[in-house]
Image 1 (cartoon, rainbow, N blue to C red):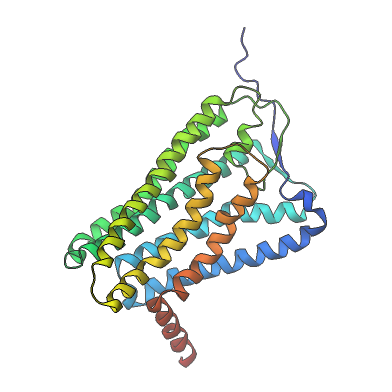
Image 2: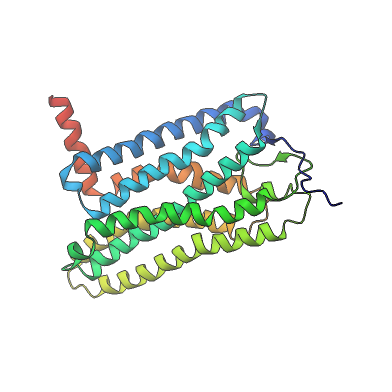
Length: 308
């Protein structure tokens, strides 16, 4: 009789950056500081958009939703990274690993779709400025804000289930600082072909397709902007898109490298640092320092707080 379940692994060991043993405390301090700045920065943007009437527009509405996603995204991985940096025990339970894996993939894919919708908003604003308000009405904005969550957590379910169905009989050491698809799949005792292929297909839908949509939108945006006669008009149009372009480039660049062709290499965890720590840390600065309206709103709120 064939065994129904050969899984014997009850927990996984997250190796993290154990090879840099003498720098564990330094890495801990840097990551903790980055995490605090990231959370506070994204909370600041969310509050600014909610309290400042000058930011009550579709573009800033999507930015505020993106800030919430970023806070949740970093909170899935960074606290565990901080824990394994200072604790002797670097384990995570079997079910805890898959819960982290599912939430992380769901949020990550939701961000991919949301970034593409943010670029669509800029596309409409630049290519159809007279109809922008009627097209990007509140109903469409709320729909576009909800769809990334649905798409992300639905698409990510397939590779997670296929990975969960693998037999895990040992070893149980994950060469990463969180449970990620490729490192976990590489530990399976059974053939990981289906789970690997499902991961590639899911990544193609959730990462590559939104990325291609962004490229298509920006080609149209650039074409439209180049037809503007005024130099100031061109500068203003490009400035509204530059922040999105920088964020999208950093996030999609590392995401496509890691997930579209998952190999579970030693370098994946360093690439993962980019989209789990570095990009969320830089986003608040990108959206504030490169956006005059957000910067002015921040100064106004701070001034009101000081005066009161």
